[in-house]
Image (tube, rainbow, N blue to C red; front, side, top):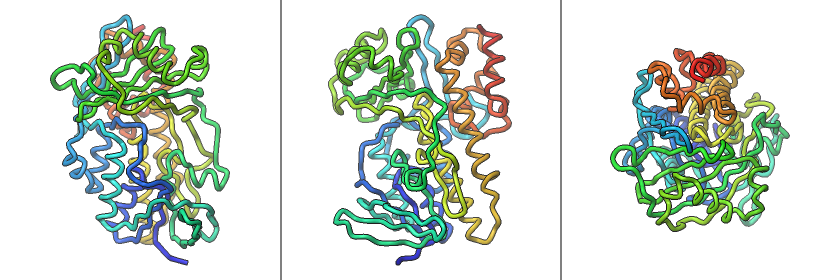
Amino acid sequence: MKEVDVFIIGAGPAGSIAGAKLVQDGYSVKIVDKLKMPRFVIGESLLPRCNELLENANMLQSVVDAKFQLKGGVVFQNDTDEPSFLDFSNNLGQKWGSSFQVKREVFDKLLIDDAAAKGCDVEYEIEVIAYDEDANIITVKDLDSNKEQYKAKKVLDASGYGRVLPNLLGLHADSHLALRRATFARVDNDIRPEGVKEGYIFVTVHGDNEAWIWNIPFSDGTTSVGIVCTEEYFKSFKMSDKEFWEHIIYSNKWTKERYKNSNYTVDVNSLSGYSSAVTKLYDKNFILTGNASEFLDPVFSSGVTLALESGAKAAELTSRELKGENIDYKVEYEDYMMLGIDVFRDYVNTWYDGTLQTILFSDKKNPEVTKKIVSILSGYVWDENNSFVTSSKYALEKTYEVLK
């Protein structure tokens, strides 16, 4: 049996930033992943908060050097109103007012390579098959079914959609969000806006809010294009994923023009029932991070932000605990993470019920309210100086009543 200070399941963004921070604090870290890197992952649009988290982990420079597409903001558009342009730099004074559009297979590999260079012991195609929670012993096997055990002081689950510990320990809980489906592809040769807005993410409402479309441009000239809708809406068309994607994209007034000259670079695929939750985020010997804990919805690109935030926070608390501090994980991890998750959830819910769309498309928005909303859509959902964080649902409801 091998011993290690911290054992991390998953080599995605949460695992990478946690491992990088912990080895820089002097701890031994083992990271395993069931798959081989690089691998295709959806969720390619980052938020400015990501830059700050990566900078604090001494990982930002490698991302900057990769020359990803600069993301300066977001554009919301529908069939009837003027497009709503939100510049991320129009925030409440946060340091970062931009971020990046990234191909996740490149971004994730870059981060885990950085973590390995800093001292993490990283191994791929290793599956976690058992976990003794009381003894904190992890059993893994390789592709040849050879087994090995690790005794750790702390285990961090950053396994993403694999949700390793929730599966092994029975921690799954029902999500409070509706069952939705994402149908996506990558294409080339799209017609982009010129200038700084070329790198913006465009969020396009389709029809009478039956679906919405993401448009994420990459620096190599290709674009990620996905459609999000309920399962019922998708099934009503009685189409394949590809037929549905083409029908929606080429019937929408915005996207049919943007992609009229495009060809596939990655074929159409889909992900269904992606929202998830758990009964607990931590226990004495483990912490759940990123999508292994909770995933909401892709509409505000919160996935990587929550992964990096939870990975960084889990690493900081673990480091302090291993130095002898008594950590109140309920307050410092669960309550902290749920503050941001609940804010994002309120925005997701009000997006789908139309409340937030009314606010975003209104021509009567208060400039200070806009800054507060921009700050949240930039990923600063833990900034308690922002009343739209501390009272997110109430603030949105009152703003809607004024503008409707």
